[in-house]
Length: 244
Picture 1 (spheres, rainbow, N blue to C red):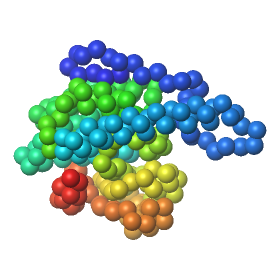
Picture 2: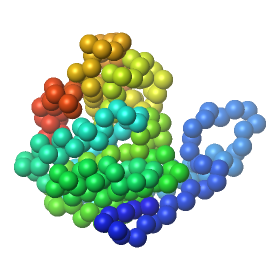
Picture 3: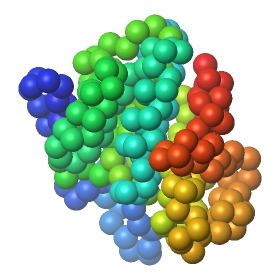
């Protein structure tokens, strides 16, 4: 579903059963399900390439923000669009299963935003991204920030046509998250370790988390930040400026 200021919702039903490659194949497994998964991903990749071409032709750079719920995506995004708004055009795609709460927060900053509600879906996909691009029509040269649904599995599997993928992990989560969700961290171009202001109060080893992340993604860049205090955000903004 796509909602912006009362615009009609567009449903996005998934084939049943949910055709995502969540599990590993086992002898005697359902070959039909695998075929459906392959077709869904192939269709998504085709649409993603069309999105990528559309944005490239207009100089629009999309950054896909992914994390588990509560890692601080929206707070980081809210601060970023406020801080970066004067440097280049910024637009936002907000992904959630329900409500417009996050989009309303972003809209109060004055940033162009569209809310995509996925219903029972656990991620955004290229078709939803295409509809969001149509609704937003971002200006040439824009930075398009995409807040994906809170989930450390599915969003990494579905290309949206984005330029870069950013994974956000907070210090209130486990140091071993990169090992538990290796595909997500392997797909990342940048990892933000958020809520650094809470480090004195939690059991989280930043250096060990970085080592775990680089064990699945040796070249990934890792930044430690705090959306509350602003620590490290200048380095993140420098990285965003490089995404052209």
